[in-house]
Length: 266
Image 1: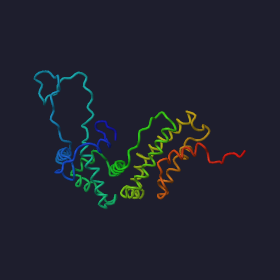
Image 2: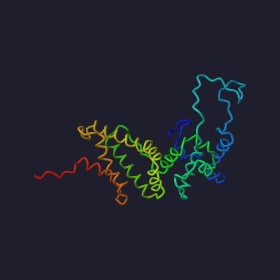
Image 3: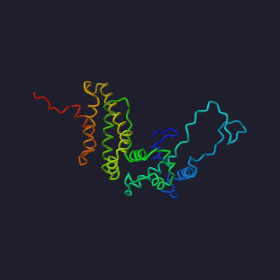
Image 4: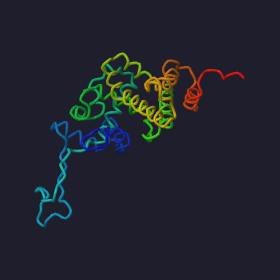
């Protein structure tokens, strides 16, 4: 999901490439060209070599130029358009009523207008692909400072609230989560690659708040984290009818900082 060459870039896939009406399954011309070559040869299409600027006279496009201290080659960058077509194909099939368990790589490839090799080069199995589909449908995780305590914790609590709103407003997303929980391998993949890193980030924010003197230092940090996250999870997951007002994160933080005991009577 990082933007390095040879690795997946989910955000680049979501924003990359214009669609061409004539390409299969809404695939862009760029994706069609790449996947046609991959489907027929089993390998990514070769891009004609260019003569580097400043190469010695007489250097041909087919011959490597002598360049000082070349950086190691990391591999061919992935096609953002092809990845976008694959994610869109899964979403389209789910919207058409196909269950997660019934989706095959062959069906997804056919719908996206790509070869199976194009999918397997990006995702080794369906579980990783489906997790990226869910992440693509959810609101993006907001950036945090990584240096603040309570301020970062508030940002992450607000993100939890907006994801809860997204699930309530999207019948498809709600249905996908319900199906994921009945497929242990898929749920474990989502938990390990999405939920666990989010929880770790929140625990680290609690640690920073403790170190900064914003929170007590005589309590277990994971317990403190649970006290902040618990009310939001109850509202977003266990009580789908409960309101999720804009100031909910602030109200949770304020209630915990002030405590629940009544003020002492004079």
